[in-house]
Length: 356
Ligand code: KG4
Ligand code: ZN
Image (cartoon, rainbow, N blue to C red; front, side, top):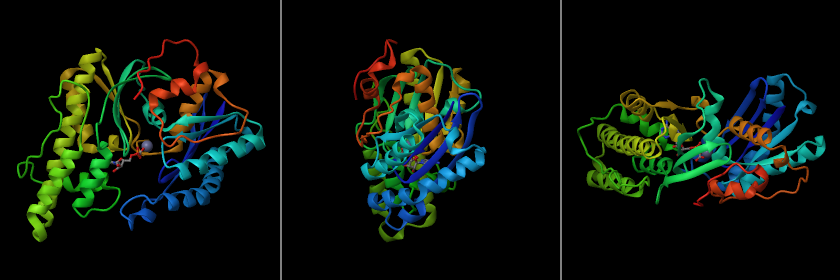
């Protein structure tokens, strides 16, 4: 079965073809970073318009890359939410129009489920059950994953997401958008002993996070330097920020593994591309004897491959999840644990849903 995946929830248009027999056949991406950079963040209306321009050319690109005809597509998955409403509508419209034209089933996919399952596209893949840390621009959550569609929330951020804290702190340091990669690169030149930033909720006895205070601490340091903030100061602050972030994320992951008794940790979402985080988690994994799995670097941030893959898994588990209806809605706000409700016919697999 060849599944087309369409991702358009934010500032990346991603299309991909996943074959349940042969694996990922092709994926193509257009990032709008350059377009939004001038505004210091994503401008939703511009994002939607750009998705309109990019989706069909990217579809043609993946078909050519994979060497398959449009008519060979067996099913279509698109990101139904969460994300920017206008941006989501573009992918949803294209997916449903294609489905109608080809008379193929169409499936709305939860963006975070795509991220969560993306490490399963790599070798070696984790086996269920595992603990997953979802760290993206909009979310920071620890999940216990029992199987496809079986996600239990263990903890989450009470305010800013990790990626959001990266982006906001980078902005305070005058770095470009998106801030994650920029602050991470700059941190490599920073002195680890120059500043100590708070580690919010490090010892909170639960698996929740809070990052808005960390961002405020960066703001306080920047203000303290007023106009004299030199490049080395910026690098030192970046280093302090990354060290605090990495320590909190790593400590909470270890606590989640202890709490669940599981030995496999999956990292998903854009911040999962962070090298300092990977180094710290790999060291902890060796020390504490657990396995850690990451998506390929190119599949950490938003992409169509994870959406095609998640749709394929859902269809494999439950062919009734596919719709031939072609009426659609998007869900800009959509808790991951609520997908149990959206897919009630998934079968009686003892799913856990505690609502976010
Ligand atoms: O998963 P993603 O592409 O989009 C959302 O679903 O939000 O994640 C984007 C986030 C941004 O906040 C970006 O700054 C962050 O991931 N990010 C990174 C790195 N690459 C992307 N953060 C830290 N280090 C990186 N290398
Ligand atoms: Zn994402």
